[in-house]
Image (cartoon, rainbow, N blue to C red):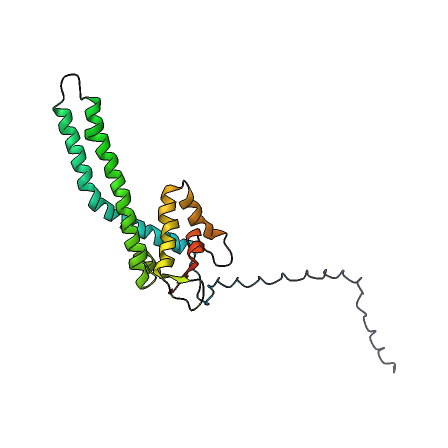
Length: 210
C-alpha cells in the first residue's frame, strides 16, 4: 500500500468579457472672466455711478424744495386768503370774473414766476458758489462724490460750474424733456459717463470715498 495522494488540481477562475469603459468626461467649463475694472476719470479717480449721482440729486432736490416751501408758503397762503375773502364779499351773483382775474389768477401767476426766479437764484448760489469751494453740494458730500475738471491738473472754476448750471437748470427748466435726457445721458456715455451738463462744462463726477 504504498501509493500517495495525487496533488489537487488548480482551479482556474472563469473569465468574463471585458466590461465597456466609461465615456471620457466632458471638458471642464471655462472659468468666468474677471469683472471689468471700474471706469476711471482722466486723472485716475473712479467715476461716480448712475445710482450714486441719482441719490445725490434727490438729496439736493429735497434741499431746494425745502427752501422753496419756506419762501413760497407764506405768499401762497396770503394769495388764497385774499381770494377766499373776496369770495365771501361777493354778491348773490358770485364774484366778478374780471375781479377774479386780477385778484386771484394774476397774483398766483406772479407768485409762480417769482418762485421760479427764486429757485434759479438759489440753484446758482447752491450749485455754483457753494459747490465751488470743494466741488460738492450737500447731496454729493453725503454720497462722497465730487465734481472735477475733465482735464487732469485743471482747477474747477466758477465758469465750469456756471455752464453746468445753464444746461441743467436754466435750459432744463425751459426745454421740454431736456432734464431727463441730460440725466440719463450718463448711462450710455463713454468713456467718462458724463451727463450733458458735464460735457458742456468739460467736467466729470468722481467717487472720493467708499
